[in-house]
Image 1 (cartoon, rainbow, N blue to C red):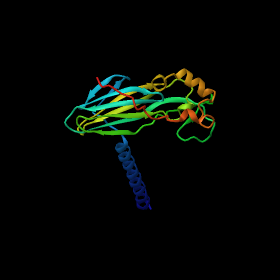
Image 2 (image 1 turned 90 degrees about the horizontal axis):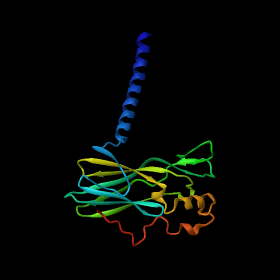
Image 3 (image 1 turned 135 degrees about the vertical axis):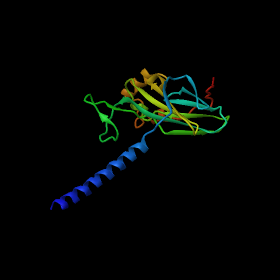
Image 4 (image 1 turned 60 degrees about the horizontal axis):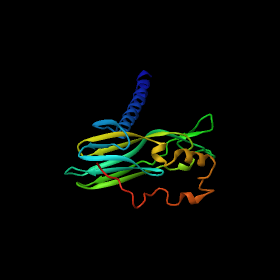
Length: 207
């Protein structure tokens, strides 16, 4: 009887070990590691891994990352939204990935992320980051944008906080209009025409 119990326990232990190793492997694979990380600020140029990056206010409701490759090999530049909060009113229930506080304000970060650009030597590019659901924002916020520069040998990350004043031309007026429903697309879709695009005459000058 004892050997039988021991045999069952061994199978259970083996299963637990297998699951633990699998989860550890999955977690390790999903973790993003860098050779170096630094805190950055808006409108400041950073030279790293043979490239130069600069996050700019851009235009209303978006920020723009300018990137240039000054090296002899390709670099990959990635922008990710990795944390922060933006408060907005929510009239619907069951919104995924958001939590509702006791004061009926839904707090969540909804800056778009996952923007990736492969830049060849001597080339420049712009990566735009647009604020989805901007018409719901009604309180001050800040959101961390992670800029990653990878030259195939080293990965360097710069964390930049973006605030409502970086996103909106006039955040106070935008918040006020949002609270009054003036920017609600179901009531006034005209304010959303062309939103999310950079104007044709937009220029970001690299230092």
